[in-house]
Length: 298
Image (cartoon, rainbow, N blue to C red):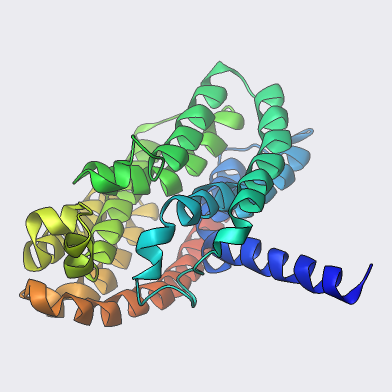
């Protein structure tokens, strides 16, 4: 392999991996793994399903979600000042075809396996999950440009792996389990809505719709705060000690509260809150893990 070929291959890998948002990999793999284990899925041959399922939701799933988004949103990404760092690369046009092929090639084997070891219920959940990933940014569908549906679809990206984990493990969707999933869904909607606030002016300038361009910056922040609160309240229905997770909604509300009166013209100031959100997720993930361990050991 020549030096030029090595450089091209290295560049392509950096672009493809960067487009999959490594910082977000855990946000989809963890819900699946945690739900699968808590639902008792590691009995018998479940370890293989756990490992391969977690690997799928760790990288290929994110490459399908974010890689295709970077291809389809290339023009708007060029004008987005947030692109190029931890929040995603601006995927060079020369790597678009390779990224699409990489997304398909890495997803198909895992999907075939997960369908083969699953049942109609888990397969239906997986189908919804993959559809939501593609529909979010695919031409014509573009769920990301349909107010409220954008937040619901984005939340589905993160909640559906957990639902799939329970279904694959033949777990029961009891009242507490449903409460946990609904609370998680509210959290996801709130997070996506707040994330869109920082792009209100930029999105309007290029004709992109979102829940934030529809409601405006201030009302979107307040709606996000309300969703966090509702999500926290729903978690109380999980019972003791799961209900302690309701307290984890408080830091998110406090973090975005300073932007509740944010003018649309100053929407970019919300980026500071979004940066806090990314780090807050790490702390929250640690605390949720401790809570799950406690529940498992009871």
